[in-house]
Length: 202
Image 1: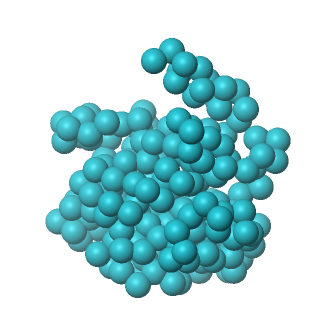
Image 2: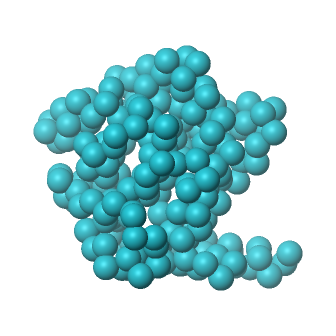
Image 3: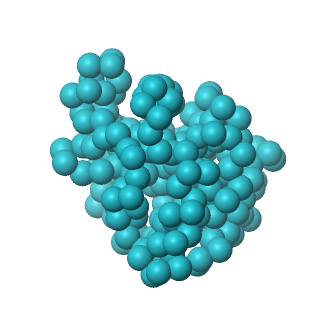
């Protein structure tokens, strides 16, 4: 079974303080779209945030909201908070700023996770590790995350150095019949304007 994890605890500084989880795409807030897609394959969904009140009126009542324990240290803190409470063998972790997350891609990566006995399966798009649309085994990884936070090693990508993980590139995803736009995120007002402009052109 699978748990979905949405990291919504960032400062949104590049977006001028605007909450990226509440940006709308095709009439829906990003986080609503994400929960809908996660519900297709996830038994439980966790949102890591310091302010659940931003989302409770939008999302189903059974969402579990968690704050960072090691606050202010980026996505690694969010992984820690969620992984300490995940009850399933695997977790699908995404950032709240990605409007195109893909349940089919996550399901396919989950199969790779099981077949290879990996601690993580991470898309690698054009040489960039997309850890915020990855599949993970929380119980295996949590001790390493905790050790890194205690040692003040906050870079998320550094976590992969100590894991047995699989990277899946764009070609492999396409060969599996999967769209690869799920990795796209929105960090700035300019990127959001480009996303909306793309909708208008359709």
